[in-house]
Length: 265
Image 1 (cartoon, one colour):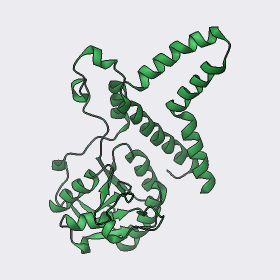
Image 2: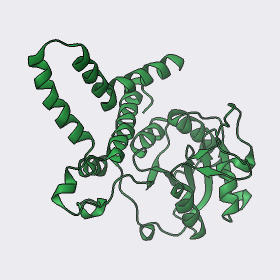
Image 3: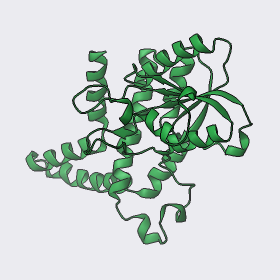
Image 4: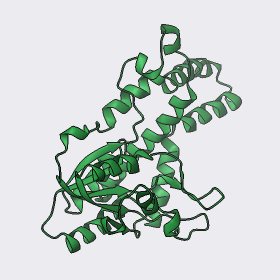
C-alpha cells in the first residue's frame, strides 16, 4: 500500500500542467538553443490559454462527471441504504466545537432530503475521519453528527470508520452490507460527481451493486452563460479557477486508471 501511495503521488506530480510549465520555465532559463526556445514560447502560450480556459474545463467536466438524478425519479422506499463517502470535512480549524466542510456539503444535505422523503431507509457513513494529529475524529466532529443535527435518528445511521481510500470504502462497506442486509441489494452510493466513476467501479469490484447519486458538481449545465462568460473576449481570459479544476480532474482520472491497473476497480 505504501509503494502504491508513492507511485500514484509521483505519477500525479509528473502529469500536472504546473509541472510541465515549470519544466518549460527551467528550459528557458538555461537553454542556449534559441530556435527551440522560440518554438517553445508559443507552445507555452497555447498551453496556458488551454488549461486556464473556463469554458474548456467546464465542457470536459461535463463529459467526466456523472449527471444528477432528479429527486422525483426516486420512488418512496426505493433504497434500503444510502452509502455516503466521507472526505468533505476538515479538522484543521479551531474551535473544535463544530464541523468544518471544505467542499461537498450537499453529500449530506441531499442524503438528508432523500431520508426525510422516505426514499432511503438507512444511511451508511463510510470512511475514517482523521484529526490533524492523525487520530480518528470524535463522534462530535464526524459526518454522523451532521446527520444527527439534521434530524436523522441514530438508529438509522451506520458508520464504517476503517477505510482510508475509495477501495477500502467499498471493501469495508460491502462487509457491513452483507452482514446486516444479506438479501438486500437496493443500495444508493452518494459522492461527488467527479469521483463517482471510480467509486462505483470499486463497489462493483467488491461485489456490491449500487445505483449512484451525484453531488458536488464542478461543471455547470454547459454553455458560456452558465459559467459566467458573457462576451467573446472573456472566453480567452485566463482563469486560475480553471487551472485548479484541471488539477482536480487529472488527479481523479489518474486515480481511476491506477485503480483499474491495480485491480481495485
